[in-house]
Image 1 (cartoon, rainbow, N blue to C red):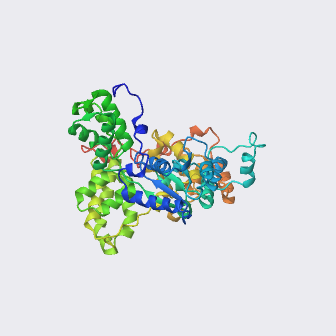
Image 2 (cartoon, rainbow, N blue to C red):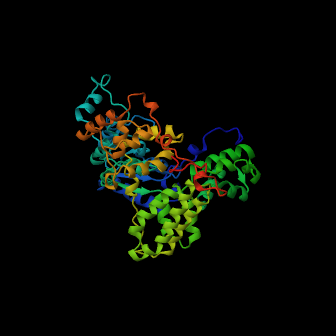
Image 3 (cartoon, one colour):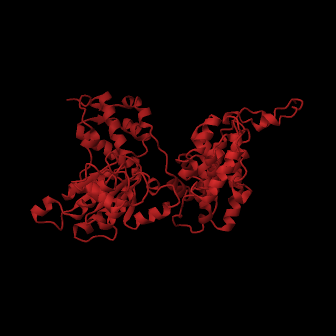
Length: 512
């Protein structure tokens, strides 16, 4: 049967079955191997869990399955497609992690035989870390109550994850693409992170390099009895960011085109398929920018990051405080100001090059300045001011309402308009909860007005404000509230030959 006719999934066919077949992330593999050796010797490590975090396709799930097969251990697997609430995790994982496998018991080698508990994609667990009552969980687990008692979605899943890590007598391996998604975006994210990291080791997997991808490509080609021009191999991996799973799939697709010998022309048609998202996560981008040898390298890293220049400028402004001394901060402040001004031009004209300068200037400044602790990895944190005002109860209705009225996306409102509205309504800057003028002009409700001021509806003062807001509404229909701009129109000055910025048709915050 030819390669083109063989429809077997090569990613499964060539999935490594032992750690020695894994490519890349050598130091990470050694650390995990040492952790597993302690389990094999009957010693329960201080941290009973191991969280493998990193982008898709670098071998996180493959590693967990490979070590289980190599050591002859059993495996309990829960993935994102399965029910993973408190009761489901306790039934399948927590209980299973406290008992040896039947195979180990029958073979009389219970100390060396282990059961790996694999929780795949834990960052897709929804909800908070709030714990469900034991009575509620027991009812779901009880055979008599199982049909009547249910727990919806992932309720209590994160809390049961902590419980599993505390009680497990077997190794627990978790895979995670984005740890920040697991911690959550609320004010408790640091506490959530620390609670998990006190019980589990975080091992960051990186995308593999071209050398490792070449090895994988030739291993697959040899296994299939195929040949491939060296130029074709290079063309296939050139735009691959280090996703081994995607590489093998591309090889299978190229074999379907080229047959027994794959030429460079055969992979040309796959160029668009091979050009995958090669963005770098923000923490890695910043860390590499701060340690870059020259400005060109730093700017390339920043342009390939997973944040746009607006957000990256905020990340620099926040983390520069801990990376540089006061004297260095003063020296690079001018570049930061210029970058901010460059980005502001996108609101008044079509200067798309502002994005280039918004990225280039802060990265050049970071390379030019001397770090406070050279030779050490900088301690990077999430900018606290980017989280403020992002609570679900605060933004749920306001952003959607503003997006509809402005005729734009919710993302645009959240990024461009929302921070300014919060500033206008900040009491420390002169905002008054009793002033409803802006809310009325924007067509917002009383609850939306409370959200802008950061006042939950459960507070006593909220009821008084809502009552006053209702009294301020006109007696006619809400949609007929006259717009203040129409009431205060003044005589238009004589037109001039020069076109002012105000005449631009580009959407801006001022025009809104």
